[in-house]
Amino acid sequence: MYWAVVAIFLVQWLAFIPAYIFQTERYYDLTGSLTYITVTLLALLLSGATADPRSLVLTGCVLLWAARLGSFLFRRILADGSDSRFDRIKPSFALFLRTWT
Image (cartoon, rainbow, N blue to C red; front, side, top):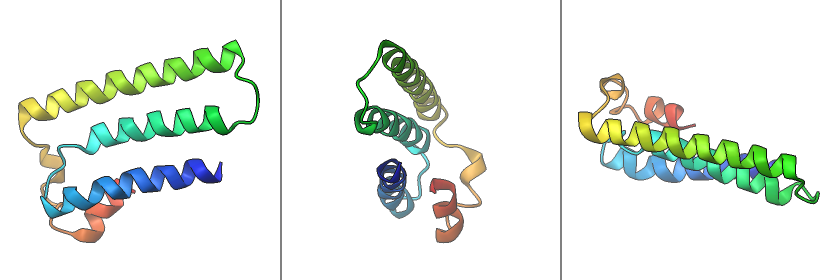
């Protein structure tokens, strides 16, 4: 569990750095999906148990859901250009980091 939490913060905070520098939320949802995918695979690999069919099916469902949702939200932000909900918080380091945490 420890490494899953580390992975969550690592992925999100690494993605925050260029997002803050360039003042963009363009990759916010895509990063969220990548985080779900990373932690799901990490949990499966580090569980220590033999991957039974139920675990594999559940992992596959989560991966499919995260990839589908992430790609949908990323295509939407590309089409819209921005998300107005972020306009007020992007200039503030603390507020913007809080959304990525």
